[in-house]
Length: 47
Length: 170
Image (tube, chains in turn orange, brown):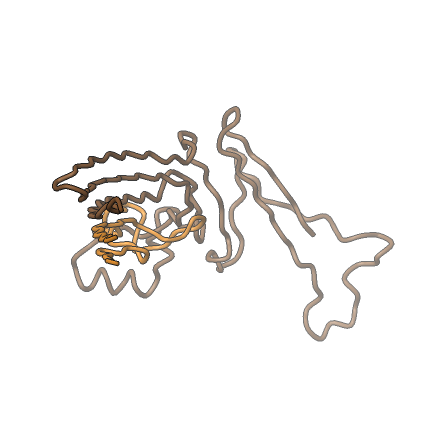
């Protein structure tokens, strides 16, 4: 039996925290938008 | 001495709470007591303005924080989209493809009493602001003002491909 998996993903956010957020400014939160620390681009496995 | 006021500018929105502390102490070296415990502290007069506000006395504005709730704040939410296909591309061989997208909106608090990034491009002006940032905040009489609103959005997009051979019959 053969199994192979390939996952591509992308996670974006402005702030990791659930409560208080930080950053340069609140005026334009898009400036904070970037890949999250939980972002995992590619996972693959085969067995 | 503590004086506490709660203001509501409209029904169910925007409650502002102010706590004013006054320390009553004798000048250093003055042996006389300031007040007798049995008599309580002397009456403290606040300079209440016609609009009900009381001017801040002191210089350390940064410790004077306030909270502001966005009256249009929505509940946090999560949206999910997903889909997939499966295909037997050869005998006993299956491939699967699936996609998933998630959008999440949260409620977060941010200091909204922040100096705008585009306040000036003039070096002299920027130096002035750097020397005394408090005077250039949108609300100079406050330190940080925590605005609770629908800040914080996450998106997740992902796709998975899987290939497997089905077990053959004996």
